[in-house]
Length: 79
Image (cartoon, rainbow, N blue to C red; front, side):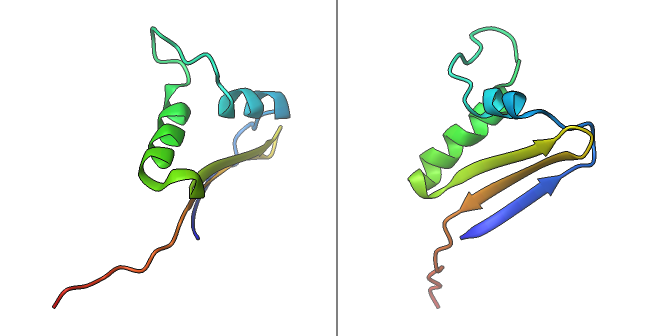
């Protein structure tokens, strides 16, 4: 597994905010509120299947960490 981590030291979010961010069942039909996360998770599943994923952890006053997990596969090189 290849993991890519992005983190900040911002104001953070509580557990409910993180849950809503990751399980947004009501994708906005108009506007651009919170479409980035759902777009990322949709594309991860499209390209890598269930082996890929996005995890977000956060604490109020401590910041937020987002980790993208990708399946590691060997590349075949033709000579």
